[in-house]
Structure formats: structure tokens, C-alpha cells
Image 1 (tube, rainbow, N blue to C red):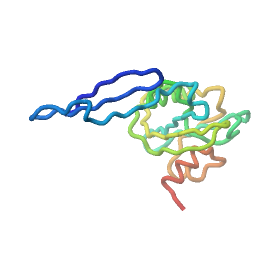
Image 2 (image 1 turned 180 degrees about the vertical axis):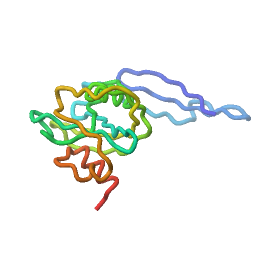
Image 3 (image 1 turned 45 degrees about the horizontal axis):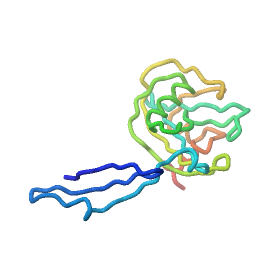
Image 4 (image 1 turned 120 degrees about the horizontal axis):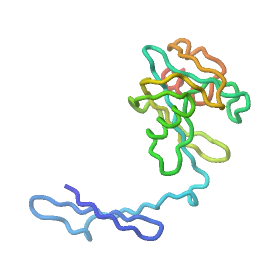
Amino acid sequence: MFNEKLRARSSSVEYTLGMRGAAGSIPAESSNTIKYQIINKSNMPNFCSGIHVLVKKENKYLIIQRSNKDKEDPNCWDLPGGGIKFGEQPFAATIRETKEEAGINIKIIKPLILYALPYRGKWSLESIVLASYLSGKIKLSKEHLNYKWVNNKELLKIKPKSIHLISLIQLFNPR
């Protein structure tokens, strides 16, 4: 069994792990100490993260078409998703972004893929999760033009694709 003590020190957090067993405990002084820097907006200027969702309803998947005014992938077909706000949990961001962009409620099933890419002068860690459709009528945000529910074959053929859709397809259909 591990005994964890947490002590905050200026801009870092120090974790001291001591082990307790049947014969007694190992003093904290002889255990390992690991220091982690506290992450805040000022010390992470070149990093961001995003989350996207493959929503499944019966045997089809939701894709949405980005606006022609979109800076990254204008008119491309994409998955609902977006940035994770500072301090927000990734699955909470997934549910929020799906509601904001498509107006529907989902249930997250599992993570599918994690990848990194350059984004607006930063390095972005992106992920895609699989979710099932729960309820709601599709109501697109102003960022999108159209939507479709597509099967696997249609998903592979749809053009043009966003970088996120390309990443997902490469995972399941490597060349």
C-alpha cells in the first residue's frame, strides 16, 4: 500500500511516496521523491490540446462539414470537436464540444487515437474518442455548413477530409 503526501512549493508540486506493509513502513526520507512543475498558461505558451469524437448511431457515424471561412480546413468534412479549455477534463470537453457543434448528447465509449500536429504556431496534442449517440436533434453551430450520417465505406470515400478525419482513417486503414 502506498502512502502519498502532497506538498506544494512555489511553482512545483513535490510528491513523496512512502510504502507501508505488514512489517511496518518505509520512512519518507528513504523513498523516492518526484517533482512536477505546475502547468499554467504562462509556462505552456507553445502547447494546446484538442478532442474530437466519432459519434456512432446504429451503423453510421456523424461527420460535419466545416465552414468555407474556417482557417484550417475550409469546407472539409470533420468530426465534432475542438479545444480543451485550460483545466477541463478531456471527456467533459468532448461532451461540451459535441453539444456546441452538433447539438446532440453522447455517451463516451472509449478513446481511439492520440496524435500531435502543429496548430497556429503551437504544438497540439489531439485525441479522438468513440461515442454513442444518446439524444437530440442535430443543430449545427455557425462553424459548420452541413452534416451526414455515413457508414464505413462512405467515411473512407468522403472528400475533402480534415486532418482529424485523415488521422482517424489512417489508424483503421493503414496503407
